[in-house]
Image (cartoon, rainbow over all chains, first blue to last red; front, top):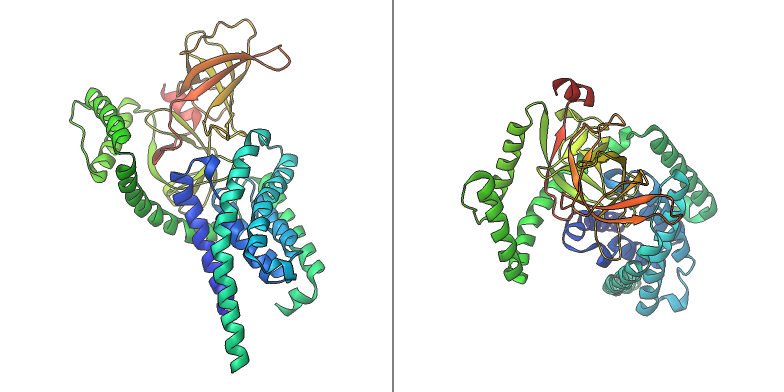
Length: 166
Length: 282
């Protein structure tokens, strides 16, 4: 319960960060997706459906606040968490390099999914012009994911050791 | 949690179907749900607080980082304010805010037919695909969907969703926005749509459906035409910076630089009267 609240608080904090600081001070081409960085960490540690629920909740809050298509971000975040969740618990996924690579791919996957979701609704996303900024953003998202993943793994390991000792 | 872990496929299907239903309902009805309103009501004051605090701190840091550039911009702004109001420019954040609000008051004076509500931008979309932002005014302040949003420089956009104390605004630079517009000099009418270039970060619009034989030149001013029933006639949108042909070669397109600096927008005004009321007053 405590862990769930912690993740929810962290996600809400990042939504605030994205919509106030990042959107105001960082040019659109260099904006990392901090929510995806956290969702990736959750999806690599917990089972995919649980990670998906966190991701969908975060996406829904973002949608309600700023999206003209409420549910689009939520669906994109949910499906991205499901994709990353394929690697959850795998031995090779317990490595920060893999986590960074997963965050990079997740950032791009989320945008592709979002475009696929909003296009049938009559919206016209300029996907080609966003390709290069998307790669830059994905790289920044991967960088942000690394410390979050390392910190999370450390705290999880400490928790496991304490539980074993008790 | 155990049920979710034990039935991952069922959970995924339920979540996806629920989200699709929410997406379809909100897109087709164009309004927010009770839950959405509640979330917005709780989160928007927090966003407002963070936005104000961060704005002050950020401005201070930006002042340290880009001091010379800011000083130059500040000098230009001082000159403009001096021309408009005959006052000396002021330095602190609070005094700058006062200046911006004073411009709003002047705008009220120049446009007595407009019933305007001043609101602060408290959050912006960081998405590539949407240019929307949140303002700290909602239903309780008289805000309704489709109301026109302005700044002292020109047209900003329109309200697309309203909660009790928040409003969601779609900027004219959003690729899904469409404004009926006309060229001030030639009176040619067309439709202005957002054409954001994510790569360069520029926020521009394109004016489409223009007559093929028009003689537009860079520098021509673009205003709202009053057609379409949403935006009143005569609000400044921007100016033509480039004229090109469409891919098929059958249509001319004007690239427009909006008068409003969407990257720096902090306060806006919402036009509370309907287009009919404004037209009657004219």
